[in-house]
Image 1 (cartoon, rainbow, N blue to C red):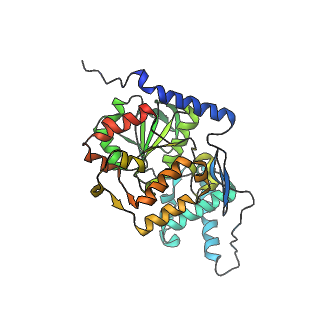
Image 2 (tube, one colour):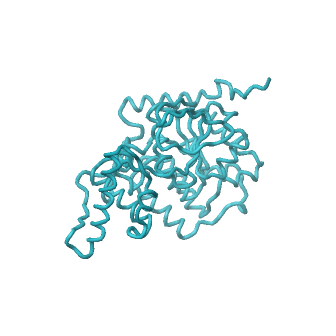
Image 3 (spheres, helix red, strand yellow):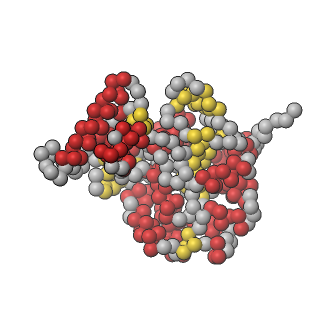
Length: 353
């Protein structure tokens, strides 16, 4: 009879358990980050929430008697009437469903998405309260079980991934959650049996910039279990931006920050300092483009970076070197270096910031 791997010994998770204890202590004090606040346009940074809207932010007026905005006003009324019917009948629809009810009228999906965000912001309610769902693109695997809204029981596997659900009822947890930026890296970790080797753990990927359902799931896992959550992203401005969305949110969704952000998230890798520490050869690195440099400069100016001196130091290393690296650069050391050495050592010895 074959037995599933039981994962590492309990002592392996000693530093992780200490980290979780410090997170719980920070929660009791009413926060999870060093103090720091700032303002930017209609959003404000607050260490315990992330980027969220200020109550006195600038509003945008859409008039029914103005030629410039009459069409937009009509489209808002159209979608409001559809939302009313959904709520009244207790049914749900995706943003895509709404678009295809009259694709010629709306023109493109972006128009519908923008109006839904405006309505959610105007009414000060999460999108789900409007009975509008997003189509999931994320994947999840590992020691996680949950019950879907219709009562279906789902048990995630350490060998295969399932789509991130739009809503879940009951869940059981692992020891930690690893957010993986890219699907290719996520699939490679599955192939290397990483979840079983590090059991009990959970892995999730938003396949790049995370969709709403993936962010909601990460938030729910944090709120329910307060397990340590780490990000594995490329050592480039785009990867850092994605990590910031999970941790602090985005300007476009700042009105729903309380439901989406997890400021307790930590950066596990790939750190720019790891490139020099591991002697990754220069020919595996990629020069920063002008667009990369602009993105990096933008992130460094954000208010939450003042609360993250170690993050700032890593980004300054990247800026000084003018080079970036993908996670795949670790394969220079060995094909399974990421799952066999890099991640286990980071988790065992607290190599996150």
